[in-house]
Length: 227
Image (cartoon, rainbow, N blue to C red; front, top):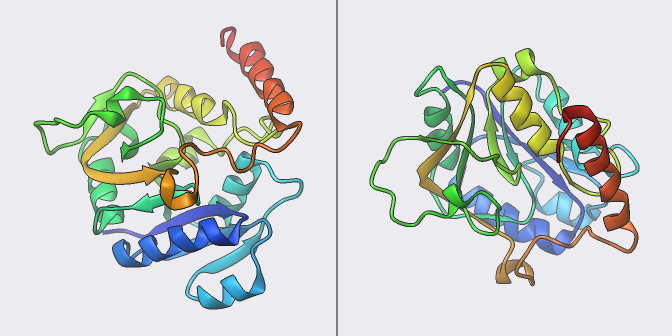
């Protein structure tokens, strides 16, 4: 397997601790943590990770881009910090899926609490990566470095609020470049849920953030001509 580095924007100690424990149980690839306020205690506990400072104020796309740049030439396995990884060697499985077909630009695992229904299918007969016509959220996604080089980084105009539309924007750009979006049915990552004290990912949606997120949606509509 070629070089793979995970990128994980993170802010909250308790959430990151749950994620980090599952990561160390399942994944061999090194990780870059884009730190937006983790305590010194947590960073000392998980000193095996590399930490870089998150751009301020926090925006998902800015933090992800900082991690991608810091990773150099490696492929990127992007995670939200509110993910619990269930599948051993998830990095290897997603890597193999990404390189199984030249048409594939991005690969995501099966997940909970995501909008793409294809990722929620429980009775998948094929073990190979299958193509989805829906967009995949960047809660967890494998990005080949060649795709990043061709398509570019996430659009940093999506800097308002927390995380809204920058992942859909990237999916559109990948498809425009002639690639497909894949899903690996043999890899499962839990998003949010009771392990993190909630059923959906909403920790960063503080007062006023939802209103700011609407600016991202407005920008997306201006850019692509539809919502």
